[in-house]
Image 1: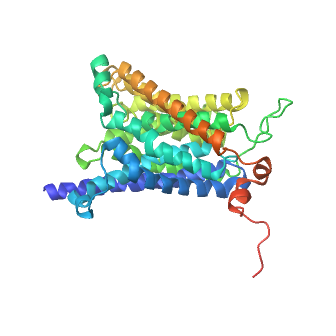
Image 2: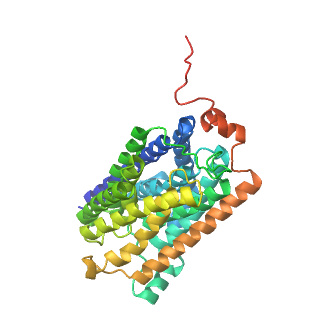
Image 3: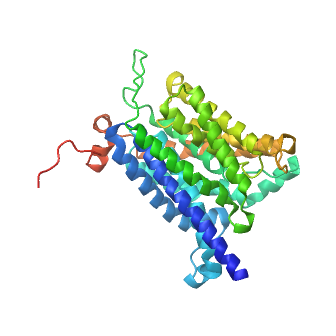
Length: 400
C-alpha cells in the first residue's frame, strides 16, 4: 500500500507539473497576441528560453536555496520513492519559471535579449527561492515569528504572493528602468495606442493559462490524499468573478475580458483552500476590477509602459490575494478559518518589499553595466528582425 501511495503521489504531482508547464504556452501566446506584429517571434522565443534557463538554474541552485535538497547525488538516490522529490522539483520549477515569464510581458517590445536571461538566472536562482523557502519551508524562523505575533502563520496555499506578487513587483522597477516604448507617450501629451496585434492569440493564451491554473492550484496539495475539491471550485468561481468584473469595468474590451479570469485566479491562489466559493467569487470580482482600473491608470495617467499590465495583474492582484485570504478565509465569512489577517498583512508586505528590492538591484545593475534596452533603430525595426533575424509572417517568401 505504501508503494502504491508513493506511485500515486508521484503521478499526481507530475500531472500538476505538466499542467503548469502548459501554462507557459499561455504566457507565450498572451504576450504574442498583445505585442505588435514585429515583436511576436521574440515573445515566443523569450518564454521558451527563459523556461530553459530557469530549469537549469533552479535544478543547480534555486531548489537547494528554497528546500535544502541537492540533486548532486547518485541516480539510485534520486529514484527512491518513485522519484517523488524529482517530480516535486519539476512541479515547483514551473512555479519558479513563471517569474521571468511574468516579467517578460512587462518589458516586451524594447528589452535586450541576453541581459534578460542574466536577470532570469539571478531571480530564479536566488531572489525567488529565498522568499519561497521562508514561506513554504520555514526558513529563518520567520513563519514561527509571525505565528507568535499573530496566532497564525502566513498562509499562501498556491502562490498569490510567493509567485504572482513577487513576479509583478520585480517587474515594476524593470519596466520603469527600461522606460516606455518609442512614441508611446508623445511630447505634445498624446498617447499612441499600440493596439494588440492579435486578439485571437491573446484569447488563446488566456484560455491556456486558465485551464492550466487548475493544475497550479489543485495540485499545490502535492499529495493525492490532500486533494481538495474546494480549491477547484474556488478557482472556478474566482475565474468567472474576474471575467464578469473585467467585462463591466472594461466596457466589454476584449483585452480586459480575457485578462479578467487571470486576475481572479491570481487573487484566489493564496486562500483557495480556505474560502467559501461565494467568497472566492467576490475576491475574483475585486481582482478583475482592480486590474482594469490600475492598468488604465498606469498606462494613461502615470505613463508607466507595462505592456501586458503585469504589475496590476500579478503584483496588485497577488497582493490582494494575500490579504484576502486573511479576510475571506475566516469562519465569520464562511471560510475554514485557521488564518489571521495580521499574519497575511505581514507576509504579503514582506513579499512585496523583497521583490521590489530584488527588482531594483538586478535591473539597476544590468542597466548600469550591460544596458537593458534595444537601440532606437532596433526597436523601430522590431525585436523579431533585430534579435532573431526573421519576422512572424515574412511578406516575401523565397522561391525555391
